[in-house]
Amino acid sequence: MEVTETLLEEVYKKVSVRLEGQRDITDELIKDTAYEMLAQVAGDTFVSVSQRLKVVNHCLNSMKKLGILQPILDDASITEIMINGPKHIFIERDGRLSELEEHFESDKQLEDLIQKIVAKVNRTVDSSNPICDARLEDGSRVNIVLAPIALDGATVTIRKFPEKVISFHDLIKWQSISEEAAAFLQKCVKAKYNIFVSGGTGSGKTTFLNALSNFIPSDERIITIEDSAELQIQNVRNLVRLETRNANTEGKGAITIRDLIKSSLRMRPERIVVGEVRGAEALDMLQAMNTGHDGSLSTGHANSPADMLSRLETMVLTGCSFPIEAIRQQIASAIDLIVHLGRLSDKTRRVLDIVELKGYVNGAYVLNPLYQFRRTGESGGKILGELARTERRFENTHKFEMAGVDCGEINQGKARR
Image 1: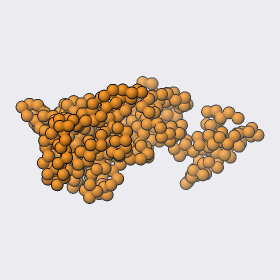
Image 2 (image 1 turned 45 degrees about the vertical axis):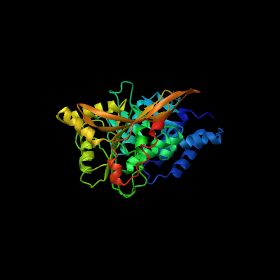
Image 3 (image 1 turned 120 degrees about the vertical axis):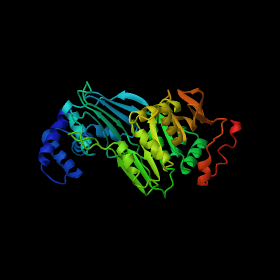
Image 4 (image 1 turned 120 degrees about the horizontal axis):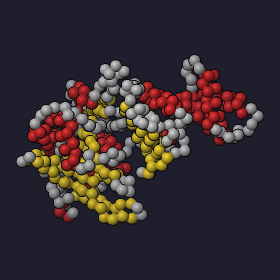
């Protein structure tokens, strides 16, 4: 017997009717009912074990999980899922994009799935509010854009959450960062330097921020602020996790990152970790860094460390009318280090720059490159190179001294590079 889409939906509908109105519908109840309904539909036709499992799993995924998406989400080798309307599902695997044969039967089936996703995190997406950020139960990030804004049908982009927390040990193993640079950043986090992680889309900013966050000493009080909660800080018990909220159908009740940063300052934080700054909240983040919350971390989209500073200026200007010189002084005073990430042509993610922001002098930022990625060649389609220490000394060592962190090795041996 061939397991067609028609057969799957027929059995699913029968299971739904049988279980309608029942409370505490368990996975086992769905499976048992699916086997029973399949037997009715198939009659005397032989159905193999694998075919039975396919039908049962379809019913289970449709009722308790995310339908045809669930097997894709369960595939650990897939890192991103892109749904362009009901007929086109693309995935990223090993840095490469490909289209799947699976698709939704109709716009309604896709829209029903979208509503199931947003309902679980108390968010709303509809024609009056057609754009929404959400997350799945495992923390995977979801962006949704509905028609008619999305011209070819609802668009859903899912950045999958890794099964285990990615540490600097993993990043070193994958050659995303050198062991020396990782040790340097660990010391910087412990000494409460304010660090900003920049990079393009898909460069690994959130993953890197998460790895950095796990260097924070376990006895500190941390507030994390995100659009959709993704960070996994494991070694800090005194942790408060805050997440934004969209406006309701009347356009009221929205809680923005800016609101959360302002509120967090009344929670006695020792550090504030903002998942990503995109707009006027940049000013509040900078002010927090400048008012006794050293060791704060955040990320932003940019093409280089210098570009990140320009983008921060633009973000701040969207929410205030301060003179540009005052904004630049604020940025230079708040941020100690910029770690810039990139995605190379071979699809690998690397730390490309670690730059010290020494200050703002004579109308210009003073940037001090400490580590830079140096490409040495290419082999088997893979880019070869290393994140190497520059000849420049790390200047602002006062936080190391205040924290009692040994900084003797930081500038030692730089001349040999």
